[in-house]
Length: 103
Image 1 (tube, one colour):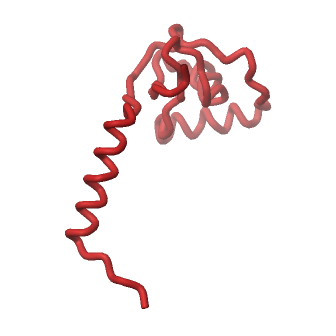
Image 2 (tube, rainbow, N blue to C red):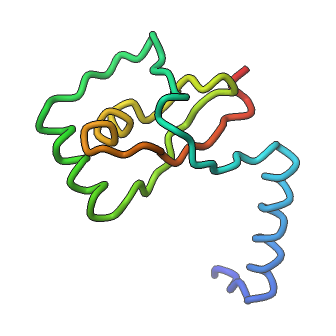
């Protein structure tokens, strides 16, 4: 039989997870100008015009719901398609997270 988890146990687990993230150098979410970001030269993905248009429509409707992952120098690690779609619809800034372990 499975043990039931109470509210107190969930709070402790949540607090422990937060402490672990903080000790690992949790990623900070920052709004950055598009001009400060550089695509990774090793990015293998290519997005079709239809994919970028779809991303752009969703960004207009919902905003950027998943930040672009970048390294300390502003090179994009994940989110190249989101950046291109943001440029196409006229965004000047995008939400980013810096990966502290990318060095």
